[in-house]
Length: 161
Image 1: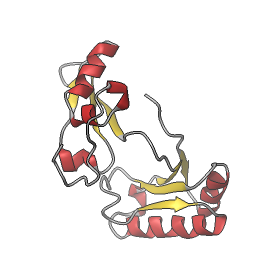
Image 2: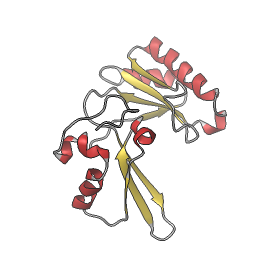
Image 3: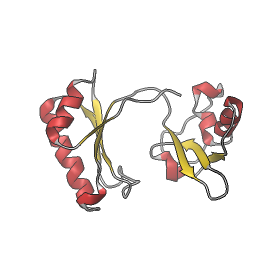
């Protein structure tokens, strides 16, 4: 599964340097385990592409997060290139009480809670098991790798798939 290059920065100059190393516009978003809904609190900025705009975006994203959580709960700001194609996907690994670990897959980004649909796997599992888990979620309708592109909702609050 392809991933997007992500850099964690802790100051505006670091953010500017990260954006300058990216071809095309970037995304800045807060990195805080206490803010799972960073878009809802204004802690995401899209389409950033100049050093001046990056420094302003860094300050805005950080201030938006600080209005909701303390500085100790903020790891920094993530800088990523903007991606026009593909489907955001959540993949999480957590320790299990009965099994060594559990792997959860499902729709990512703003779809995580809006669609509230995921599948959990217990390692070890095969590629076929992983694809089946994806197919058990709404990702099957959005994922070109699953070979079943039907319709991907443009509005995450819409459940009409």
